[in-house]
Length: 224
Ligand SMILES: Cc1cc2nc3c(=O)[nH]c(=O)nc-3n(C[C@H](O)[C@H](O)[C@H](O)COP(=O)(O)O)c2cc1C
Image (cartoon, helix red, strand yellow):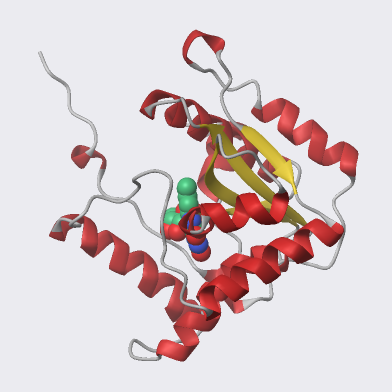
């Protein structure tokens, strides 16, 4: 089948964790978010908010997150993400993704310091020109998160179409109280994730990370 332009965008998209030092014009960011907001949502409720965090606010947030890590503040997500305990089949996928990432940057299996250094880059939004914090009103259930997920992917594809790239940052959801306090967000804002956006540094080893997908039969079956 001949791939469409959309097929190609979706196939080429990959998480990018190092960026060129080039600003993203405000109009472009607004355009991407307006496109992403065309995503469908149940009853068209359009849940979630995107906060572009810049300047002093970004400094405050990144310092507070780094401090929380240093102080060993316990991780306490507002919402459940991964299954606990993680079933073995999923654990294998998680390990494969980690190996793809750490393999790309030459961090060996037992290199805890190397892993921690990469992990901490999450809390600096990988030094991307655009740092987004994504929140959802606390009253939403799983359906609202699903709607917001569609919007997040729409944002990544819109960015890809304009030559940008990025990475969702679930790690941010581990310290929601720190995020709310640093940004002055209301207690009702559940921190869903962060998002780094910008132009990919194609020379950065971390951006050679590539992940595979399970065979389609694992996700798709026809029932008659
Ligand atoms: C909601 C969400 C949260 C994520 N959180 C992180 C994160 O905290 N740190 C990170 O490096 N990658 C994060 N990722 C990227 C995933 O690891 C990545 O999407 C996955 O391994 C598949 O790789 P690909 O995006 O290159 O196709 C996240 C992705 C999603 C969708």
